[in-house]
Image (cartoon, rainbow, N blue to C red; front, side, top):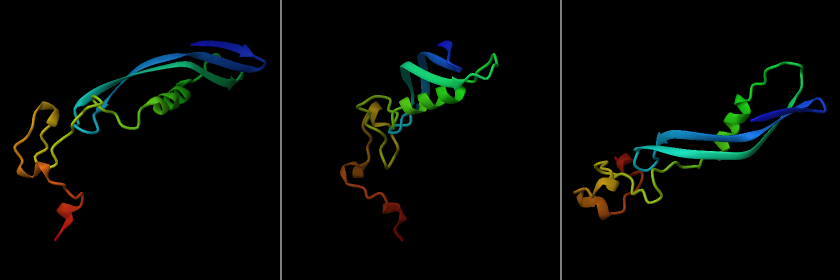
Length: 109
């Protein structure tokens, strides 16, 4: 990051590299997403202080850069809805795995 005072304001420019660890939304395995944010620009009012807290702006930029759904891989097969076996590690032995499952099936009386 680089900061400079310009006409009573502080201009901060730079890049951010970050690793985000989370669970895959399909198979729930641990996954890491690498983020590279370049050409970030923040503008703050110069108040004479020697310290500027960049964390709110940096946090917002990182959150906006995250994908809507974190996946371990683009071709993740997910979990079996019956036995919860990870289909990325092999098929399960469920008889109903080829049948269409209604999402509210278990709520029937």
